[in-house]
Image 1 (spheres, helix red, strand yellow):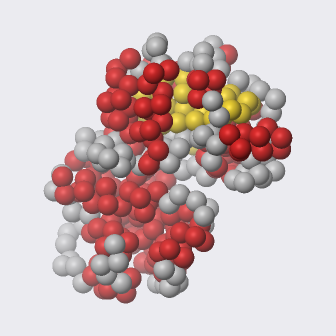
Image 2 (image 1 turned 120 degrees about the horizontal axis):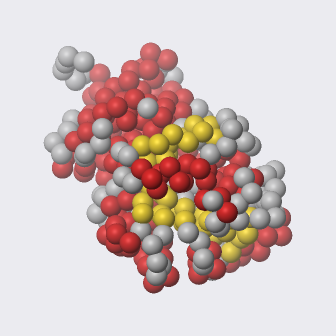
Image 3 (image 1 turned 120 degrees about the vertical axis):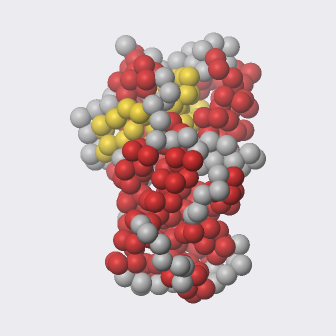
Length: 333
């Protein structure tokens, strides 16, 4: 029954497009929205997103629009896959268009730039409790989802019945959806792993070796768990797909923008040069300050994340950052 209802996907970047393609391949009517009218013409003409996902043809049941009203009209669920900096603005634009209970699924990984809140908290603040909220997260590169390669993700919502209905909408033999009621832990993991991927990229860019990368991932997981539990998440969430799973993916594979950004910095590129080289939003860079702010709020020790933020602020050099981390007083693991 869930699959018979149309769904809106807001954000025609690589991730939004990949999820729209996935849902359309399952036979669902999908409205893919972009805020750029000129891009709509290109997407409709090409019947593909050749800027971000070339070679993946849009099925006939995947419609493209730049009119938000058209995208969300008569839709029971709205999936948001925009950069975190635009998440609040999307909710504000939706506010006058929603006149009935509706499902909001966040496929965005980040914190609110204004308040540092988790994104489901921003949803409640802007749209209230008339909406149900869920977060879709886990180790999932857009190109692999678009190519229908095997993927496992998590659908998290405090309302398990809502998460279950969404899992039925998204699940396929090659796209396995696990359930969680720990939306806090799932969202925290999705934010922190991007900052840690920058650190791993820097280490590999400097050719510090596999030992260093493994240590960064392991100690990074400890940081992620500490801040997640302090924020109200469950410790076991961080050993699952949206914690350790996503962390391994983004720290070790060059499809990760955050890792590639770190690689460029480790090889001596400036921050501006590294951003230009990537050419897309680097969520870890945007959210590093917010993660450090969250750590201070909860009095949690996050040395790797804090050091990444110091590097991005250009308060210390990368060599000083490595020395700073290695010279920390030994502690019990």
